[in-house]
Length: 153
Image (cartoon, rainbow, N blue to C red):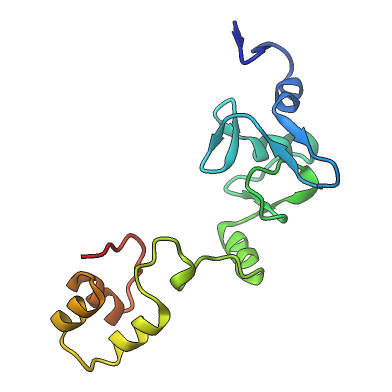
């Protein structure tokens, strides 16, 4: 059966390299095949995990494969390392990559607005109306809850 110009036969290595683009003067190996949330996919598995297994070795149980280059579509084994979720978060934090506060694309409030809300100069209803957010969001700010997925009122 043909799909996008290649057969589903061949070695895993052949199938893997069919979806890799080498860009001159760019160290990342860019995955140009099927994607899921920015990560390459092959055989229902993350392409970067396949790359690690093909070129580096076995992945220990429960371990993640992290990108030192911070490029989710990269499958260059030199850019991949095994780590826990905690290791991955520490790596992201050390590079200033975590989207927290107003850097989070889903954020509806700035850091200054959060400080203003926490000053409690106004009632919750007044704050809700001032910042055009729900009272639930105001409570979440006041009780320092995770504000991901909060929506405007």
